[in-house]
Length: 280
Image (cartoon, rainbow, N blue to C red; front, side):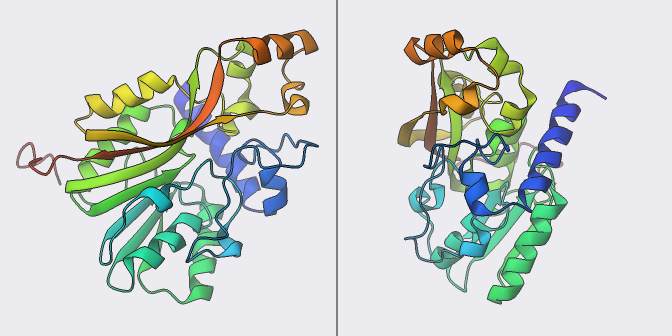
């Protein structure tokens, strides 16, 4: 088994457990990784509760932004949410698309898909569906989506370039995405970079902000815009599981930082299929 597959299995195992945790537990940890903090505040997540369409049963407190708030979703749009979890962003998106639109959530953790499907059954929506799948190989046809959103998910994927290629394939020409994610400026301490728990907790799988934005550009997207950016402060009691007091101090006083960004980009309107078979 290669290293990428091992990391995927790790993430799937952790998020299967997270699906059974309550929101308060998830919010007190690094994207629900289980390394609970005694500090009472949200480490990464933003507050969804004031947004129309919000459903508390679908909010596991795992996000690091509010991509649906910035996604410019219109009535009738087809929206895809990558790493849809229990359905939180999908239900917010459905409020924007209305009954004439369609929302598809994709997640590769079966327990999350089951939870999302139970939530949509309770709400009685007939234009929201959840599919189990890998976002590096989406179970969606090409040129299908007007808008793609994702919240604190791509940092968990080893092959981020592959995900952006899939996003480009699945978006309609002229379509766009709004993605919230974790990125770095400077280098994480080696102990954090190597820690499997922190990988599943959205931190060690993050890449440099510049590299992240470069991947978007290299995959053909245009009008790349940072819609929001904020610093993420990991509490000392979480860092203490990986770093000494001296190392924590060095990390705090160094040049490196962990940030949440929400980034928007468009698939050019003139984008066309590259050949008779590639868009199948």
